[in-house]
Image 1: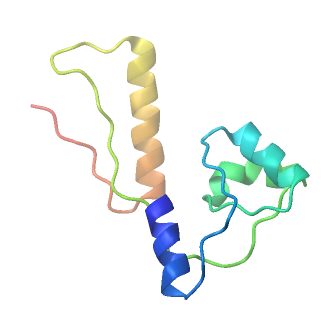
Image 2 (image 1 turned 180 degrees about the horizontal axis):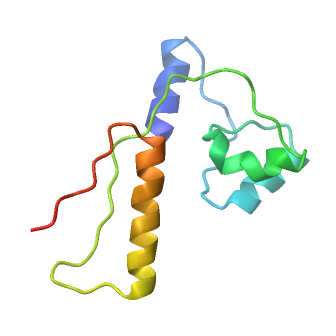
Image 3 (image 1 turned 90 degrees about the vertical axis):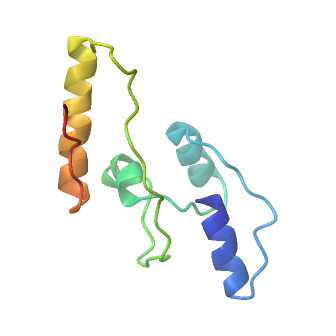
Length: 108
């Protein structure tokens, strides 16, 4: 994502922001946004709880930047625990509802 955002700035003749923070820790992101003059490029779903609480607001435009393909990795020939199996099913159901072309892998 960072490379895509850099390319977006450069394609518009803009310099990259001088001060950047790169973290996946949402409480840190929220704290930085609430206490500083900053913006963040994230999917709305990532900050929805903060928006629902009235703490943050999404800017109304699409950057035209998308994420790469991604997948779920498990150990070959290893039986998942019931909890891990339930999580895998939940992830696949979520992917199917968000990504219209998602197909669950066939087993066998």
